[in-house]
Length: 347
Ligand code: CP3
Image (cartoon, rainbow, N blue to C red; front, side, top):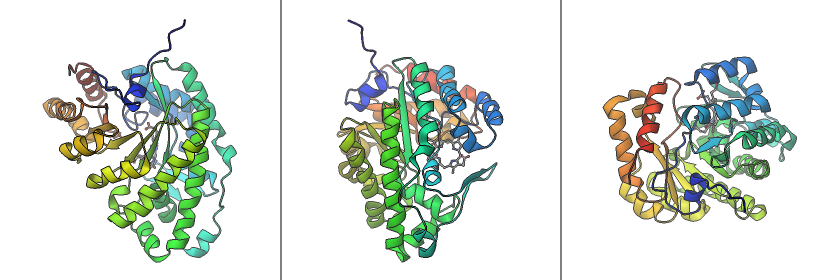
């Protein structure tokens, strides 16, 4: 009988603690890597890289080759969903994404209710290529943005410090705003199912801007749309493993976990360890939560920050990660230091 290779990352999502916590990093394919910058230059624009299966597969695999992480995350972006919904999406070097703002009911009335799903085909092809190149014990993660976070970029047309345009629109024009959320929910369900069919072992839903919302809006705009996505995906793929990342949700995380039915949550570095252990890790797996700035700082401060994370969480179901994406200025030697220390954990 051929042995089916275990994936430690998947075992944790399925509820089994690992003595040595599995490890990967959000934004692990990115500008801190010289090999990423070289491939990025070949691709042309950022979206050209996302939609080039060969190059997207290549940059997905780069951090796995270099660091031996337990999971690869498909190289793409959360803004491919607005792109498939017919919005214009561009990335301006050094500045970030630019979209045509969607900030009046008149403009929102023109939004297509359904996406052109064929635009996701190159992402699925990249997933198939990565899956066939990955060792069987390495997991492959698909992802999308949560509707609230994607909507903040669609409404403002760019990143903003406080997501004020989307928050204002949600207060002033709740019905029009729901139309945006609904279109993202429906498209994301199809997109995630397509990623599973193409070989993703697990899915992550990034809600980077969940933390700016008051409790009522957090429930309506972050939790509820995420719950609908999880339900919609599981209606067709009942065993789908889904990680939620409602960044900044803090004390509302237990509620998020109960309502959305995710298998795991990724937590940021400000999380309260006792609350997380007692009310979240007791129910689902935890992923996180090294401060990306400790990774930039390196040295003894980095060792101490890594040890704190392991001390706080590695006795339960746990996946070691950062509390948010790795930043471009992070020295590679510091990532190596982190990998060695986490691999050396004897818990
Ligand atoms: O984690 C990974 O390695 C997979 C790839 C990935 C990217 N974006 C590639 C990327 C993932 C998971 C994302 C998610 C994403 N994209 C989020 C949610 C997670 C988070 O980090 O908060 C958000 C908010 C976006 C939108 C986005 N994409 C912004 C605001 C920017 C510009 C800012 C920046 O960091 O450059 C991007 C561009 C982007 N997405 C880059 C990468 C590697 C850099 C673009 C480049 O190479 O020039």
